[in-house]
Image 1 (cartoon, rainbow over the protein chains, first blue to last red):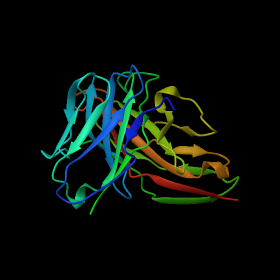
Image 2 (cartoon, rainbow over the protein chains, first blue to last red; image 1 turned 90 degrees about the vertical axis):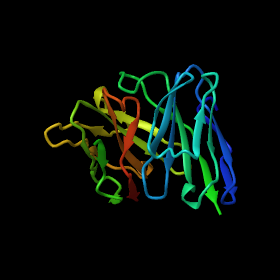
Image 3 (cartoon, rainbow over the protein chains, first blue to last red; image 1 turned 60 degrees about the vertical axis):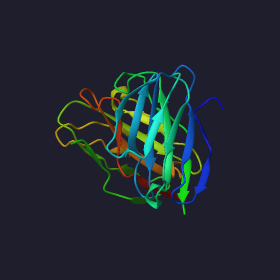
Image 4 (cartoon, each protein chain N blue to C red; image 1 turned 120 degrees about the vertical axis):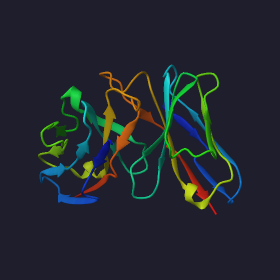
Amino acid sequence: DTGVSQNPRHKITKRGQNVTFRCDPISEHNRLYWYRQTLGQGPEFLTYFQNEAQLEKSRLLSDRFSAERPKGSFSTLEIQRTEQGDSAMYLCASSPGPLSRANTEAFFGQGTRLTVV
Amino acid sequence: AQRVTQPEKLLSVFKGAPVELKCNYSYSGSPELFWYVQYSRQRLQLLLRHISRESIKGFTADLNKGETSFHLKKPFAQEEDSAMYYCALSVSRGSTLGRLYFGRGTQLTVWP
């Protein structure tokens, strides 16, 4: 599978623990996005990178959340001191350029499902 | 603020019947509109985008700026169309360039 890859697929953690998710985008895609999806809702934007630069962060991304893309390839999303409200599907997507450009689309991974108990 | 509204959470039709999934948006500039689809146990994938003006799997969607709508239509639904459909908006400029705003989704079920 040469699409966007996310690991782990599932994560169960106790409240207060830190978790880290990894996303490997499609090779040579310079844009990488993180979204969060809770039950019954559409994906909500968290942050995105162009190469290694984090260009935008949603206010949903509290100070307990941090994302990195150190070499402009894979990205990690860390949640510190997890809370039950963090339980959600975390989606990663990548695109070869701006979505406003014709023939540019965002390709999504299968997501990491986080359950905080 | 940018917003995408999908008023129907669930939609059921019989095979061969026409189907229309509604999407309304709010954005003061020139939007880019998309329909994404998620089949059971598969990842979210792009179905179509308004600037392409193409029909994918028999689906079409027309951007109506006057009504701020981007409804998805298919004249004859098939059982394999059963899936979750998300309407999404991307802004063309400004500080939020680059992100997609999604509606909450419509679960389409096509009965045999």
